[in-house]
Image 1: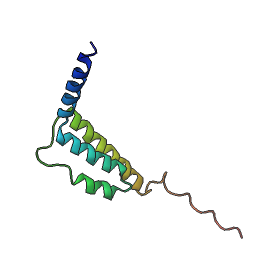
Image 2 (image 1 turned 30 degrees about the horizontal axis):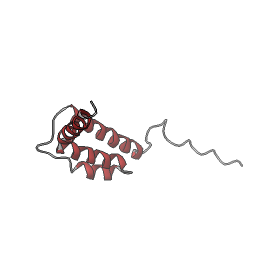
Image 3 (image 1 turned 180 degrees about the vertical axis):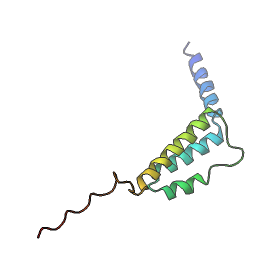
Length: 97
């Protein structure tokens, strides 16, 4: 059994390494960059590198795309100005005479 174990391990590692889709690896890299951005502009620039053609279209790619959009949405939310009545700063108190 010990003699079969290293061979099994080598075959498993080769299969796992060979099954990595380069398109998925590229999307993961872009996702990591987007999620590391501190501004929406930075994230938008990284989004421009998402391949328009020959992009993988499977469950994993869709999950990565959702994660990218979630990170971008958080940046947009953080940069959104306070415009609503509930979000505006309270009015200053009148000066005492």
